Image (cartoon, rainbow, N blue to C red; front, side, top):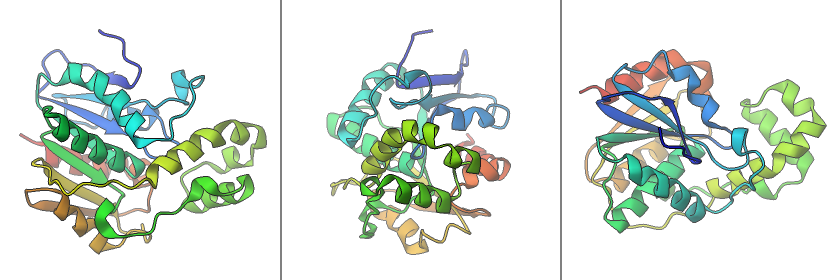
Length: 245
């Protein structure tokens, strides 16, 4: 199998019905999606996006510009568009998946058949972005603690956190960059959100409908912003139903 940098094929399939490309949240890596291997429908090939500055790409400088991220991903993704495919993105990952789809439309590339946008309101919802990447280290770590997505042991490890913070800052900078587009994507779109993710309002989920030509479906499930890690079984039931033939 061809070696990729940006794409990590977690579950290669000989003749998959569909390829699912999964985009990480800020600070996350492709490892987020290893828990999906036994839960995702068997005829779907699972490919996770691996951004620079983490895992096997730990020695690469993290990228803090959306355009550079989407360019890097697209170069490799163009080799894997021979069958139907879908995007799943959680939090920052939803934003990257959407920005990448817009770029693909502009370039005349084949588009994903479906986007699943998780734990993120629409970019056009007029919500002021949190400029977390500008915070001093102590304040940024406090914000990470409040988000409840990073282990307490890791947050207490000052040496390891000092190593990881540049990557986390780069991700947060990407997550708050504006996406300008009046174009509507022809892909089918679904939104998933946690009922205890109080930072995302329902109208911000509904606003995704303005980004697509087709009708949007919204799925609510138990959990806070990191339900992707804490309620994986329920999430995969939703994902499998969305991607069913």
